[in-house]
Every structure is written in structure tokens, then in C-alpha cells.
View 1: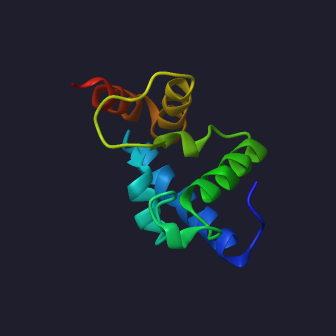
View 2: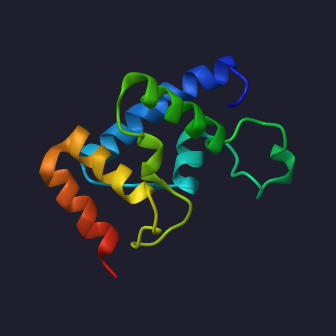
View 3: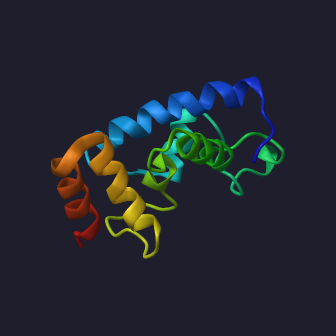
Length: 118
């Protein structure tokens, strides 16, 4: 868990709103898009960013906040790369849970169509 800072306390709710909105539309974001939304450097790509808050730090805090609320993990909607296919793994079901929770069956169907297109 990243160190609690005023920036982290502002970034988590902002990203939560952005990802909940994405979930209502059956969408995902890339790590680059989340970083840009938060106006934070991409981790490991920007050597000057060492020790600074990054999108993965915010995602870790958001994941904890979602768990504390008993909600699906909105951080699962952030993909590490561009492209229509979702990576294999447990995150796929968590994305579906997000889409269903915030957007209902239509958002889930949209999300599945986008992640399986290819």
C-alpha cells in the first residue's frame, strides 16, 4: 500500500468516479489512460518519476477502498496495455462484476463484446 498523502487522497476518489463511469458503459482504461487522467507519470518509463506517486499506487489504494465497501474491484478495469483482447486470468471475472454492478447486463454485454473482439 502506498504511503497516504494528500495527493493520494484526492486521486483515489477521482479515479473511482472515472472507472465507475467506464463500468456503466462496459469500458476499460489502459494504464497509460489512467496515468494521463491522474496527470501522473507512467511507472518504469519515466526515470524522473522514481519515488513519486504513480497510477499503480492509486490503483492499489482504490482496490482496498472497493474491498472495504464490499464492491467489485474497479482497478480491474485498468489494463496494462492497449488492444481489444483482455489478458487471461481472474481479472476477467472481476471486470464482469464491475460492469454488472455499475451498468447492469447491457454494460456487461458491451464489455464482453469489446474484450473478445479481435
